[in-house]
Image (cartoon, rainbow over all chains, first blue to last red; front, side):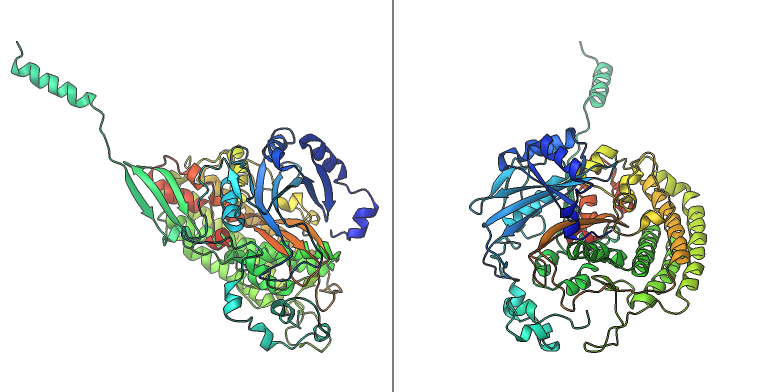
Length: 205
Length: 397
C-alpha cells in the first residue's frame, strides 16, 4: 500500500506509462511522487491542456483546483528549509471514472499580478474552486463569469492563504499549547523553526 | 357598427390572448434552515412557483483549516480535520494519515488497517443513518428519524467504545491507531487495543443495522408521498455530475459505477467482497436508494472484517517520536460517506505541512446547486437539496 520513495525511484512505477502518455498528449512534463502523477504545463497552455485531458484522455471528473504559495519569508508557520523561486503554483486534479486514474496538473504563476485563463468552460466545477483560489491567493482567472468572494465577506481585504498573510489569532495570543507541554528533547538544542509549532508537539503522539 | 355583444366578445378574446405577466421576486432561504445541515443561504429569483438563478451563499462556517494546518504539527492536524464533516469524523482522518504515511514510507500493521477499515465503514453507516433520518423528515415523513437515529446511536456507541469520541474520534496516528491514553510521555507506549467484547457487539449491531434498513425501506419506499416527491425530481446526468466534481453516492445514483474503495488502495478493501451500488436515473429517489443499499454493503464489509481481523499484532508502525514528514507532495483521496475526500499534502521536511489542500466532498457536491435548481418548483428545492446529503462543515472547511 505505501511504497517508500526509494522503491518508486529504483523501479519503473506502474503509472509511468500512463504519466508519459498524459504528458505527451497535453504537452507537458510528467513526474510521479508517492503515487501521484503531476504534469507540469506552461501557463499559456493551461486551458488547452485541460481541454485535451478531458476530451482525449477521458479525464472527465473534476476533483479540485488550488494553489501553493512558494515563499521564502512566511508570516505564519515554518519557513521552507531551502530557498525556492518565489511563485504561485496552481494545481488542478482531474480523474477518470473508469480506471480510477487521476492526474494533477500544475503550472507556475508569477507573484506579481498572477493571472491565468479560467477553466470554467472546460470543467463547470472549476467555478467555485477558482473563486476560492482567487480570494485565498489573489489569483485572477481570466474569463471567469463571477470572480467574487466565495467564503470571505465582500469587504474582506487580503488573501489569507498567502504566506505573507499573518494568522491574526496567533499574533494576538500565542499558541496555548506551548505552556502545557514540556519541550521535546531535540527542541532544547535550539531546533530551528518558529516558536509556534516547535513547542506544540504532543508527547503522547 | 360595433354592437355591445361584439365588444364583449372582443374583450373576452383579448383577455385570453394577453400573457399573464408575473413579477419576479427575490427569495432568501436560510442561512438557518433544517435542510441545510449547517448554515447555508440560498438566494433565488422566484417566478411564480419556480426558482431561477439560485445562488448559494456559503462561508458562514469557514474555519480556515488550510491555513491552520500550516501552523500545526501532523499529530495536531488529525484533531482538526475530523471536524470537517462531523457526521463522519472518523473517515476524514484516513486520507490525511495515509498521505503522511505515503511520504514517510511507513507500512501500517495489518491489525491497525482492519481497525481503520471497520471504523470507517461504521462512520459511513452512521452518516447514512443521519441521511435516512433527515431526508424523509424534510419531505414531511417524521417516523424514519426515530428508527434511524436510534440505530445510529448504537453504531456511535461502538465507535466511542474504541476511540473515546462519538463524533470527533481523533483516533488515527501516523503509522497506525491511537496509543494507550494513560501511558504518558516518558513510559513505553502500549497501543490501545479494541475494548473487550467489541467484535461480538459489532456483529450484533450489524445485524440490527440490517433490520433497520429493512424497516426504513418499508417506511419510506412504501410511502406514496415520498415517492411522489422524489421520483423524477432533480435528475442529475452523469456527465454534468462529473464536470462539477460531484462524487460518492450522488455520482453513483446517476449511474456511474465508480467507487474509490475499488479504485484506490488507501485501505485494504480489495480483501473484501462488496458491490458498488449504482442508480439508474439520478433523481432524488435514486440518491436515497443508493445510500440505503450502501449501508447494507458496509455491513457486509464490517462483518467480513470482524471475522478476518488478525487476532493480535501491533497497532502502530515504528515512527519517530517527533514526526517529520520528508520533503514531498502527494494527493491521497478516499471514498468518504459524502464522496471523494482528499488531501494534497506538501511537506518541506518539517513538523507540519507547508501546504495542505483539503478536497472535501460536500463542497463540490453543492456546487451543482445553481445548475440542478434552475427552474424547479419551490417545494422541490428542499427535496433536491436534502437528497444531495451535504454537511456545511464539509463545504466550508
